[in-house]
Image (cartoon, rainbow, N blue to C red; front, side, top):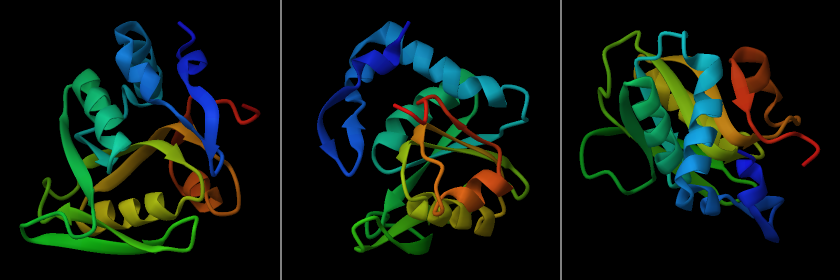
Length: 169
């Protein structure tokens, strides 16, 4: 199943395309999920963390496939409970933040970070900071598209990273 063909590339925004048509096709979504999980199936993942918002959809599917819990990394200002916060500057230069509920897993839990698109790495670095601050061990980072560039290089060098979107696409 070529689920990448379902991605709507007609309205590009900062080199991004709309991946949501994949979610409407059960066979495509299942194939995408399996391809994202494959490199991490035997990595001892204890939780999947996904970033707001499409990382919630993809991450929940990955967590279900792995048979583990899902933990959301929320946009700043959304969690009404005790939390950790990490700030970052996005691709446009805007100041943003991610939040993680306090004590989301036992210390030493192996966490797979999932998102739909990682372009500059700023949000992913903030997510990694939160996971590690909460005592998690980042076992890997998976995304539909995960670019290799100066901003994402530290992530590719330090963590097991996986993307299903070919770099030339």
